[in-house]
Length: 345
Ligand SMILES: *Cc1c(COP(=O)(O)O)cnc(C)c1O
Image (cartoon, rainbow, N blue to C red; front, side):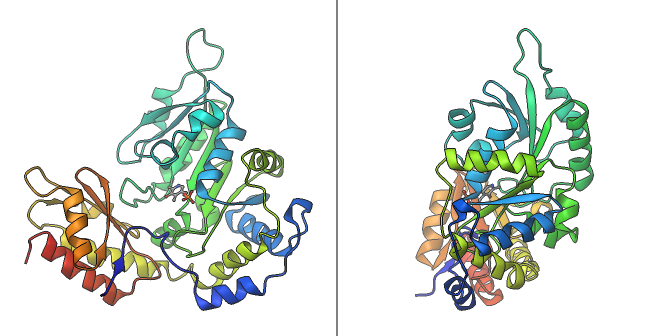
């Protein structure tokens, strides 16, 4: 039976070309700095992001955890938008690993410099936890794949600098942001001290993220990666997938965005479905099932019976994500089935 998997853009399998590049990768022991493929990937991503240095890490979650670790001290407060990956999807690691607490501001994952200033608590105060870091997620997953407005990112980071805080960009889907906005990765990363990007999302690699910033900061990241158990050896096998993906899977992301748009336009307006087309800016479609309509788990189960996999993101929230392993025709098929499940025409 046909099976269209829209649960996440992480479900992609490495293509034949990517596998060949991985198999042929020159490698060495990266703990001695001797893996040429890792070194090349790090240099290339640092360059793309306009940063001095970059470090290959096993996952986006580890990149975020390293960011928290090197930019805060235990007891500090981190300001971020609601629904952030750092708060929702990292199993409480920020509190466990770095001893930080989170102040959630704004709506739909977005916030402004005014929100940051309102939440800010200065260091040296007798009762306040010092706010030392602000984190932005772009695109924002739980916000429906929305692009973080760049003028807000610029203003937030300027305010952070003025307040003596550091800034971090969770750019797990920054390649999607670039494709959706037409801005360069360097322009998107410029306001931030430290930036991470994922290779295992839209770029279709099996493993890996990269964290970038000033050389001095990345030297701290090297130690944190070791502390978290993420230091690797002949990881050039994995880095080679990233190098291949930059050449073959970056520019095509606009296709995923068009496919998400197609899906969203078919679903918006169906009875019981609340879907804000304004939020469908990249490869993610999130909709809410209204009160009285079937809940998310029911929709997921019925869609699965018809060969379409989507995820229940909350009791009444469903998420579908497009990626390089689903074609336009696959998305048309999925849209037909989802319309059927949702009881529309
Ligand atoms: C997927 C994702 C990550 C990292 O996830 P891993 O599965 O650990 O690689 C980080 N931030 C955001 C916004 C994500 O969507």
